[in-house]
Amino acid sequence: MSTAYAQQMAKYNREAVLSAPPARLLTMLYDRLLLDLDRAEAAQQGQNWAAASENLVHAQAIVAELSTSLNADAWDGADQLFALYTFASNTMIEANIQRDAGKTRDCIAVLEPLRQSWHEAAASLPVRTGAPAFTGGSLGIG
Image 1 (cartoon, rainbow, N blue to C red):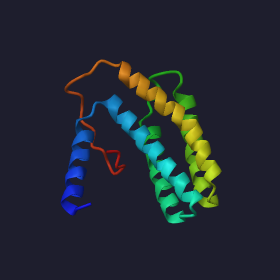
Image 2: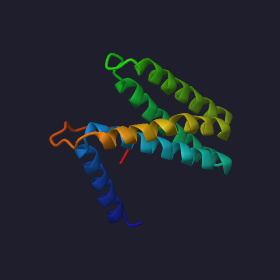
Image 3: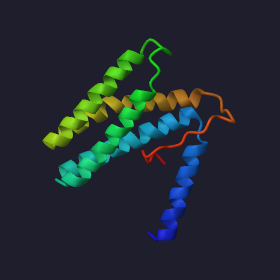
Image 4: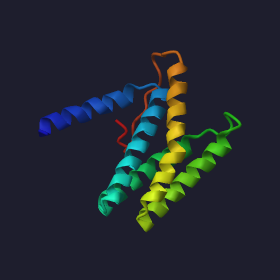
């Protein structure tokens, strides 16, 4: 891939994140989270520990972002969702330290249904224009 092409793709991804409505940002985070976990599991199975660690650490950063942005006062299920995020984060740490693809698979099994549910919920919302922009941070969700 050429450097110019890579720069264009990075710019496109940044713009997609900056212009996405909040519901789309949430689904983008979940998509990237599951991509990181899938990549980590494959790397663990191939004994590529550096790649596994990189993907698990990035996945942990996404879960941390999801946890800190969770508004516990907004709905009754927030505490349970926070508990799932805590479980996932702790399990990712264990998966990384123990080089255990089974623990990574456990995270995928817990988080994939959530990803699907958030996609369904986002698809049911009316399209809004003028939604506040999100900075995207360093999570690389584009």
